Image (cartoon, rainbow, N blue to C red; front, side, top):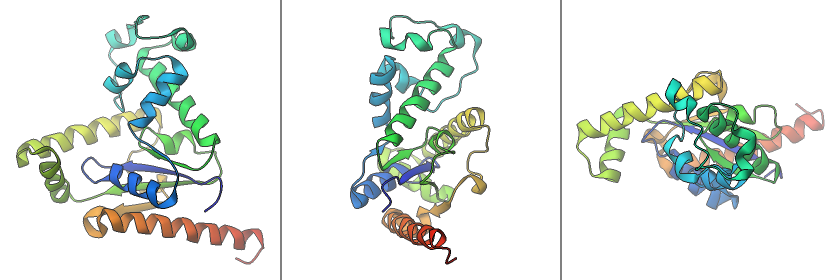
Amino acid sequence: MSSNTIVTIGRQYGSGGRYVARLLSEKLGIPYYDKELLAEVSKDSGICEDLLAEHDEKNSRSFLLSLMSGTQPFADSGAMYMDMPLNHRIFLAQFDTIRRIASQGPCIFVGRCADYVLRDEAGVFNVFIKASKENRIQRIIKLYNVDPLKAEEMIKKADKQRAAYYNYYATNTWGDVNNYDLCLDTGTLGVDGAVEVIASSLELRAAFENKKAMGEW
């Protein structure tokens, strides 16, 4: 695996994207960041981690929310973000932390517009994980012990929030195949199968890059 390999994973709610990231992290021996990113952002920016979690992957254009200055949730190191709306402060803080982590070596990012944030960086491999609504409903029922109607409601709400967040900040369309190097269906491959395909794809990409460097393609 290339020393600068960065994997970003976009995912539909209930498709198992976090589990794919965790297992891929174990297979490749590199760190992954999903909710773990929030602690890093908090350390870098001084923004309270609870506040980051509250607005995680949610785009709010509320005027009142934008006016929240909330000096109490911020440490002095977050002062650079204080002159802009809250939702923009949070996004830019995540933006800076994603770029810092990516500069330090191979890793995996789940969601949070990481593919867009790192769009100009070499070695980034963008993946989107999906599954049928039926498969996702069954996964949510099993994970959270809810009825099918509640599971479907959770899926609709989460996907709507993720799409709104991505489409607003990334200025692209969430789930559009043109944004990704690889799109996988865990309802067809399973989580383990998706991990194997991503790992194999990274090896194939590295081999192809070597051929291009040698002028053999």
